[in-house]
Image (cartoon, rainbow, N blue to C red):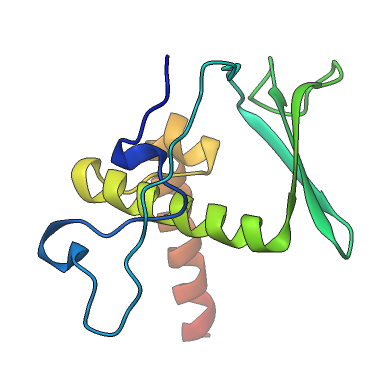
Length: 138
């Protein structure tokens, strides 16, 4: 994969459509060339974020037991260290990507229990609402 300047590899979130053109008086964003030929891809379903006053440390790994409390140690395979300015740009880019995905495919449920067995969760919510309603009547 040689140098690329496609829109997905620009730094930070980018506007699209008619508003992509800079308004009068605003500096125009320049495209940044990105060489991803040495990038290593990995899969992660676990992340941990720690920080210092100067930087954030993001550990990414694989949780082989996503249901319940893991009995084996989680293996962290990647560690990314960024300053807070880069973290804020990453946050904005991730928010935009998730918003686009949810607009196309629906809201992402991050609670595994609700995602795996939604009928159990809905029944529990109904029972809790009924209990609360009975408590308010007393």
